[in-house]
Length: 220
Image (cartoon, rainbow, N blue to C red; front, top):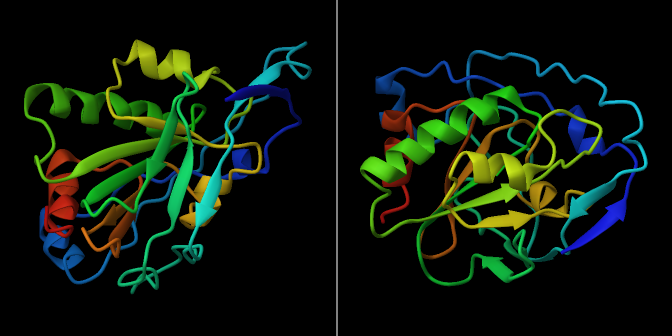
């Protein structure tokens, strides 16, 4: 991982969504992913004066496989297609690959400035601390749309404060990992089975019940 001088990331223009699905909607997620009904725009504010020249945390990312289409409605065109394999590194510079290991997984894409991500992270972490993900499913996260001019920077300090335990891949300046999975809003979830096939995608703040419903689609 390197630190580079950057201008404002294009990914910082993304908008967050909140989840409006009911419990019964999770059953439908086994067949196809539902688009979140309630949409709240993430209002971006300018950073503190003098941080425009700050060195942003960025990773080095490579992608194997085709990028997934954007999630714009239902049915989700990505469901049933192979998920790309992403290789990069964590905040500590250690190499990290997501995919290609024959294990079901869930991947959550997080932006440090997104209030919905800030609300979702402690909910998931509390669940992991008290119950934990199903033993057959691996949970990964991607820190993306990193911008030193936006609030709650840097992302590594934020996730450390929250006691975040899932492995974190650091996206690059071009948000290559996020683009490979069709990310457009935050938080953004992708669920993949053991064959590397996308079983569902979801956006916004998920309840634990909803998250467990999506995890069940992976067969883990």
